[in-house]
Structure formats: C-alpha cells, structure tokens
Image (cartoon, rainbow, N blue to C red; front, side, top):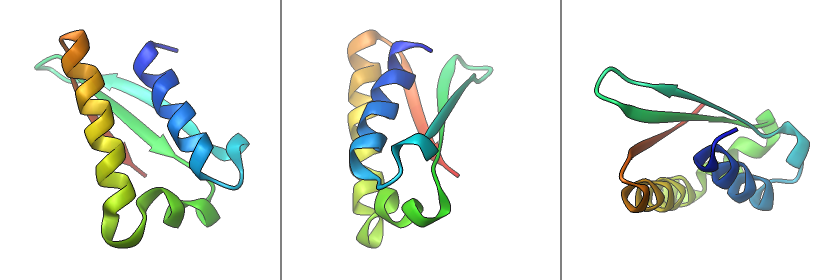
Length: 79
C-alpha cells in the first residue's frame, strides 16, 4: 500500500460507521496519473459523498494537494 492509499484509507475510515468496509485500490494511467479507487459499505457511501458532494470534493482536494506535494497527479474515484 503506497502513501496515498494509506492516507485515503485513514480519511475514509474516520468518516464511516464501518471502517472495515473501506477499501482503496490504485491504478496508474498512461500519463502517469495515480487513480485511487475508494469503495465502502453501501450504507456508508452517503457519508463519504456528503450533502451535495461536499465531503467527496474535500477528500479529492486533500488527495490532490498530497499528490502535488509529492510531485504526482492524484485522482480519487468513489465507487
């Protein structure tokens, strides 16, 4: 598990009711973009997305900032 995956898992587990249901996988795109795929228990998806997507937007902003600091482009997909 790389540092971006660990950071995203820590953030998501702090938000949800079932921390064991959180899973993160990563892929690297052809233009070297790191794509983090976040999934959680179906009952917790609303908590991760938040009202009008505000929590999801905040998570994406934090991970993008972490990527910028490390010199990488990081994208978060929530499935």
